[in-house]
Length: 169
Image (cartoon, rainbow, N blue to C red):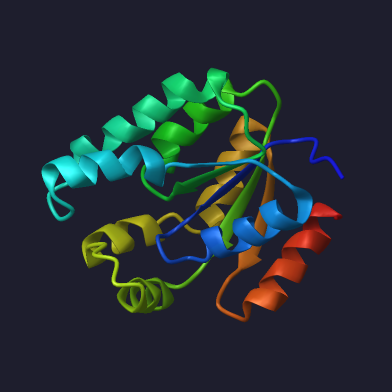
């Protein structure tokens, strides 16, 4: 089975993006590009709690520059400045993507990050959580791409089946 459009998974850190896209990639033999691979060197170099705001924008800019040379079906990004970076990402892609918004409450994101021992500052999670369903609905309408919303508060099995149904897989 071939995915015709690139899939962009977006949502808060701890929102369930990686869990869903890993299952999808394994089942359908898809290639993933994860923004974290761009962010991690900045975290290591500058310290995890210091990498915020403008310094964290650099990995997104690096990803955007690399996009034309990357071979992937799935792109995973967090809800860091989607109003700024998502239009730039879409502009660089050869085909229109499908945006998959993993909708998770701030409370759940905080709990999942704690369980994983990820030191994502709660302020960062609050900022990411501001970008909600209405925001993505308006943005995707404006830039002309499809939006799929997956509520990731429930079980992984239910969320994954919902994703497959919405993608008609």
